[in-house]
Image 1 (cartoon, rainbow, N blue to C red):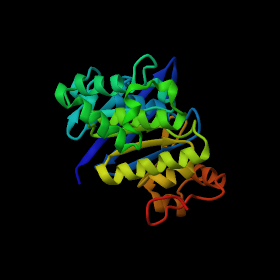
Image 2: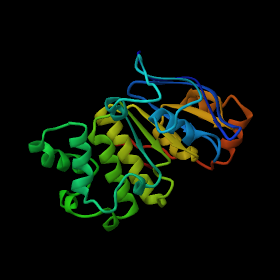
Image 3: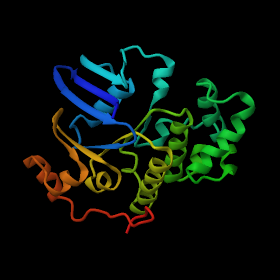
Length: 257
């Protein structure tokens, strides 16, 4: 299977500190790679390098067979979209939801002007938000609803890869579950390719096909999810797993038990 993304020997230094140390990582089409590690392990730095928000000091990022240079084209930026822990990072508080979604659609020429209204309504429906939300503003929604709108915005430009950086960590448990269920539904319906970052192994278990573990800027383990949770290779992975009392399980309809 052709790889959707390749990270080759990526290194990033901050003020003499190595934030990423020769990272090599492959992401296959229509799969979700769960990236886990403690705070400061380099997870978010790696996400920002892949998204083009940080230029690496060394190494390559390949989208399919295309190398992504330090200066990316509009089309290349479109192909990798990021969802942040705090949806306010991507939702302009002064713009209505209609403006937020329309701007992305028009800037990247996803639809012509006559098709924008219909596409905005379709995007909201996909994340289970009523179309009446279009003329409201971000502050009028709960944190979970704002995160759903941020997901809709990311999906609006039809990216090849979706990066979710701790998208549920700021939500309470019940809302977190509903957002994870949404991600799993979107993954199945849209055949998404995702890099999903979390410090929570329960979340990683619920969403991922493959698990990669980072520690102090290095990748210390990469394995299929079932193998990782049943037989972790490293002492550090076993230490992380020992702190998780119970993995959440999905029922046959895709919801949590």
